[in-house]
Image (cartoon, rainbow, N blue to C red; front, side):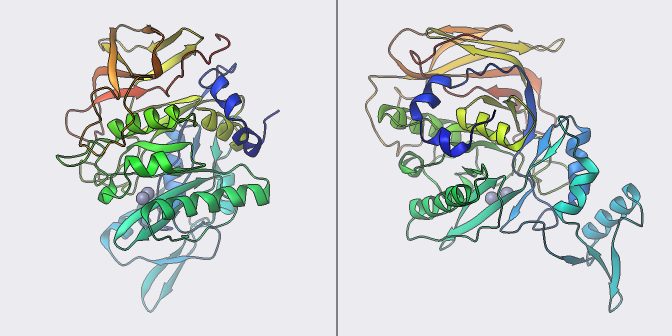
Length: 412
Ligand SMILES: [Zn+2]
Ligand SMILES: [Zn+2]
């Protein structure tokens, strides 16, 4: 039986003990962040869900800005992009399904609600839609976005006097709704480097959030940092080192598309299929997926597939699903217990934070703990070029979640 998220939150010890060590061996592929015409995406939700379902995803959460797909909403077809969307929409679905009207000579189309369209796609155990909202807040001109996966009711942006306060107020509102409704709802922090909004210090101090976007496919989110700002991956290590050293739960990293563009592809567009998560859960239901995500029982990827991530008290072992002609190397990255706690103001993490501890070629990389690691995580890098890259020349990679040595009780 799947436990309620609130019960899991209450027990950090259980969380740390079970981290990345589920008994289940079923992996579900999903994307938790994407947009439709309900906000600023350029396609109808049915077309988007159809894309994900026919591309091997098991679940998807359409997360439009500050709106749920639940009320009557008409859009006017006033430009060539919308006309293109309409024509492909009409070509895919029957004219009986598509609701059209005209308004002073302009074509209008009614957007289907989630309640209307989910029946076209959902198949128990095979495909799942999860209701979501991208709560899109700001502090002055700084955008601060939080996703609420499996949200029950729309949450308006909560505001706040600092970036951290805005983050915390929105996270708290999500958790409060979860408590009040009894529904498992999972918040995560979106694209920290978008407009350089969220820093490592903010994520270290934030309470109640277990996930953030390690990889986001939108071209404006600066996954790799710049001359004045650290990359998201460096930021992750700074946050992990400081949080774990304080005895607090780690932050897990997800990969998402944040797709907006479904008709044109290329570096300046945010397309589907750029980054996703593989969740190891007991069943394909929202409560089971969210429970696994909160435990860190998943990995993030832009293409590399893993068939196993196992850990016991002394090692991490991966099995990579290899493709012909592709080579793999795994970086085991970690931080020593003896690192000097700093808040990571620099462009890159300090040398003793997020070091590559070992570099292992092959399809079954293993790392044996030395005894002084605060945590260790694995990054698998392939020689296969990504077909929808974030940057030209990107290779497909996968990221495990951090493992805290000495906390494992069993090997699967
Ligand atoms: Zn956003
Ligand atoms: Zn978004």
